[in-house]
Length: 374
Image 1 (cartoon, rainbow, N blue to C red):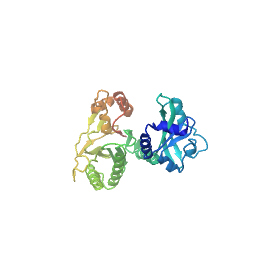
Image 2: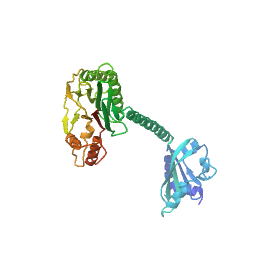
Image 3: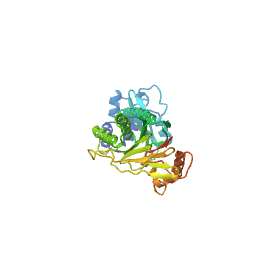
Image 4: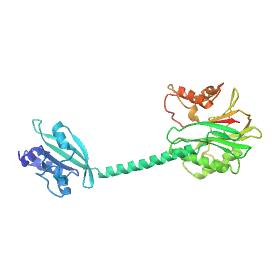
């Protein structure tokens, strides 16, 4: 069968007008379109392809029109002839990237006599994809660095003069919105706090850096709980960020001379626990969170006596809001029961109780700080 006959069969010429209409439609397409017979010869190409490759490839081999000296390693035309199914691939032609799809062309008896190939230029999409991949790679690298930094600035487990600490720290995502710190001001005073930023992830973790650095700066001038939280709130207002950003914090001062713990609460609903031998006391105290709703907030201080071997547990709501399969929350009562009457490592007892209770990955950041009086 001649090339002209193949073209005519492909265009289904009946009266000449339909052939012209089909050619006009194909020539008007932005994509390249060509038809290849069983011998790999181009029997039709649309005007767009002819114009952009710069010559007429009718009657030439399919690879010649693509500027190649031999057939492609992956010939989707052969694949379509063999399988009678649509085949696809991507190919670089000069400096452009094309998505190529080959489809079978059948006669009235259902026999394949040609394959039509459609070339779609996806250069911009692929370049954009490469840019996004590179940006994601850099962002993931930055997040990994931020994660390592966030964990690095947590206080080390062990002794801090009159106290020793241990803790649990489990971000719900790569980065956490929970933060705690302990600072020995001098031989007499040790300051400690735990904070919970709304949400979690990158934005919450950035705000934890603000909390840590601001708290340390404030404590250089004053350690009185109510004044510290007031200064922290003032510094937060100066940030002038979104109204939906806020955080809670419990801050306290251990007086090694007077054997007291004085603390104030800025909206933190996870009240600390004081463990004295076999007794557990909830250190309740109310207060408003650090947010934009109020220009000034005064926080009420409370003071308790504390003795050697007493323990304080400061934690965030990620623990008490942990849920089981039935949707029940872990709650403060289960937290207390996990350590009530227990000896040895309290952190391990708490972790074991949490593992036995919940069934899925925690949906919120989890932090718990244990402070033991030496």
